[in-house]
Amino acid sequence: MDFKKAIDNSMESLVQDIAALCRINSVEGEEKPGMPFGEGVAQSLEAALKLGQDMGFKTENFDGYVGHIEYGEGEELVGILGHVDVVPAGDGWNTDPWGGVITEDKIIGRGVLDDKGPIVTCLYAMKILKELNVPLSKRVRIILGTNEETDWKCMNYYLNEVKPELPTMAFSPDSEFPLTYAELGLLQYTLTREVKDMPFIEGGNAFNSVPSSAKVELDVKFADELKKAIAEAKDPSIYTVEEKEDKLLLSVKGVGAHAAHLQEGVNAISFMMDVLGKLSITGELKEVVDFYNEHFGTCLYGEKMGVACSDEDCGPLTLNVGMIYVKDGKLVLCCDSRIPVSFAPASIIEKVQAKVAGTGYEYELHSTERPLYVPKDSKLVTTLMEAYRTVTGDYESQPQSSGGATYSRTMENCVAFGCLLPGQEDTMHMANEYLEIDKLKIWLEIMLEAIYQLAK
Image 1 (cartoon, helix red, strand yellow):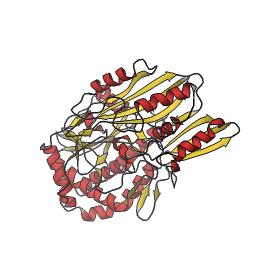
Image 2 (cartoon, helix red, strand yellow):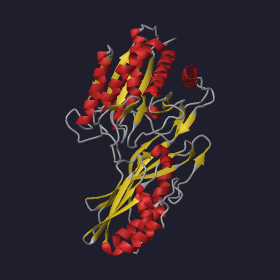
Image 3 (cartoon, rainbow, N blue to C red):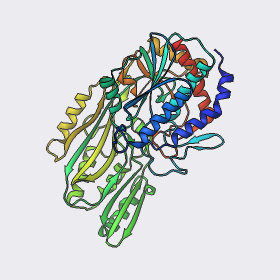
Image 4 (cartoon, helix red, strand yellow):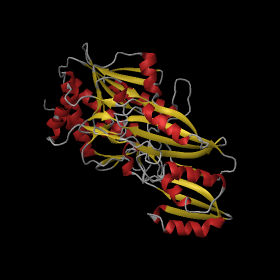
């Protein structure tokens, strides 16, 4: 069907509604009654549901964990799985990360790509189908999670406590076009050790983000050694040293990126440890630095941890240290691995535990998610691919695998579909996250065609 006029008429309000949702700081916060992940997340969920309600759709809030926005009639259900929570803003923004800034050609703000922009786009696609009274034989339901960026407690609650009717087919607009048919398994864990005389050290803000900054305090006596080590580093420009009385504060500026695409980032923690490893430091700091450089270093694929592996569909395992900090007398390293579909997370866990045994570090599982795999010749994949190709004319791009962990893996017959277009800059989890308005228009056209083809 030709939806172009309806798309043109929707663009101004679509841009405004995405920006408004991105003005809500929905980073996970302190649990409160009816707000399992904090006030900001609860506010964001309610705002999204209110938007759907104002469009005339049925909405429901399941105790602050998950929300539904549903349209249509029919026995079968098409699902669209997204989320309203976001990762912390981090450093390096040129605008207010919670400003939902609209320029002539962009929307700028945390969540505009991941995942508020995509879910509002899908909601507008449903709105256009409703307003044009397009005949559909299936219901369409947007499922809004609230804890996707951390440990998916929202979906566990939804599936195990709410126990809803599940879609017969579904997609998550939380990845890239054209389509992701395979997602690597997810394994997140912490390695902790007791410390008594550890200097200040910190870096990163989430398991699933490449840390864009890291800091450590050193004795001033290491000033000359540190200067020499920085001069010999791969990129001396990322290091800054401040001297205060008898202390040095070493700051490292990395490049943030989603852990699913850690090759696009620069891990500030790893490069801080690289320089610290060249100093004649002693005590607990030296022990931590030596452990880090022996087990992680600056490599990306788990070679030093002994977990490197690869398969044809997904490529290599990745390993990201997303955070380091000291709390309650313990030093904590937060690790995120994306595991090829041919390998069980349990096998990787066994190798990590064996590798750190006897080192003084304690392994603790934070989160694990099964991989996603839907055959490329399935009806779901072929229908969505045809919708993408009809709109874009791109017949060269093929279904792909990804290190991303989307809600697609929580249920059967579900894939990741959109919303980043080939060649569109991926600023998810980075400073200055932005969405070009001309790309948004293409998003809307693709989603309209996709939902129509799945539900007609």
